[in-house]
Amino acid sequence: MLEALNPQPQDKILQLIALYREDKRTTKIDLGVGVYKDPTGLTPVMRAVKAAEKKLWEVETTKTYTGLAGEPAYNSALVKMILGETDRAASVATPGGTGAIRQALELVKLATPGATVWLSAPTWPNHPSIIKFLGMKMAEYRYFDAATCGVDFEGMKADLAKVAPGDVVLLHGCCHNPTGANLTQAQWAETVAILQKQGAVPFVDLAYQGFGDGLEEDAAATRLIAASFPEVLIAASCSKNFGIYRERTGILIALTSPDRKAVVQGNLNFLNRQNFSFPPDHGARLVTMILEDEALTADWKAELEEVRLNMLTLRQSLADALRKLTNSDRYDFVATHRGMFSRLGLTEAQVLRLREEHAIYMVGDSRINIAGLNAQTVPILAQAIVAVGG
Ligand code: PMP
Image (cartoon, rainbow, N blue to C red):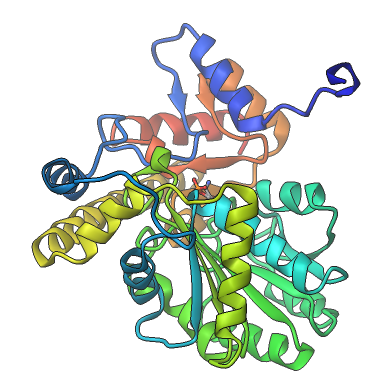
């Protein structure tokens, strides 16, 4: 049986990590992998997470199964953090944001097997990969303008005007991955109007709340969408904003009318049951403990804000360094992009030269992880970009 299997394509980022590991140069810089790193290069366990873990060890009396949808307290705390108060939310805890995306797509398939899922071009590669795996239809809307490294909003609007009623449109709620380019509030409002006119179902991927303009600010587009459509899917991740990547902590929220809520919830529970039964609990419990405790919430928010501001400082200093070296404003977009990533607009050949000649590792499409930099490496990267003709 197993000899019938074909090799799967290697994940580009994992390949890059392997190359980086093998590189013997001590000056090497990793801007590839998508995890936050502090100025010393560590991905720390956040203080509030440590405190919650210690408390959990003391108070936890059982590890028996939770509910299929997760602990109700987790779901309500996260729904509140993302949307504020709402009584329209059915939700399930999931293994990370990826699990939430997978369950959302399976829900779409269950409800409307013929629906097309629209993705931004480019998007996080796991989106098309899961859609393809599930055998669903997929289409792209223009998003990134390679000339400005900003959003190609005219192209995006033109493409979204072709969405058919009932199609699902996947939007990055904030901090677009891989580009770092995001819609303005006015552009979000226009996007909402187009999608309403087309009768689309918005599906928001919210993986970086708190990494862009702030915890509340980063939820603004999701909240606008929630208030504007009868049905919305939201896949959110706690991997980044709580720094609990390996705990696999996410949530799928389906907004619906109060009279459909019980059936939708039943279908979400059903999907969890089919795929893995009970969702992971440890990370979800830590998040709940933090969000239900005023002091822990305050400490978590303060540390998240340090993380966000550190990335903003790095953005500004890279943009400044490139402005000086190129004597132009063409890299100013680095400072206006938000989140952990920026696509620099370099060619694959330039990305390869950066790796081979300068030991600087980034994804082939020239996406960099801003958090992979520090005050010492910003000028090194800026000089290398100019040296390869960027
Ligand atoms: N969506 C996007 C856009 C992401 O970048 C990520 C993480 N790389 C995720 C979802 C899912 O993250 P996780 O499954 O680790 O929670």
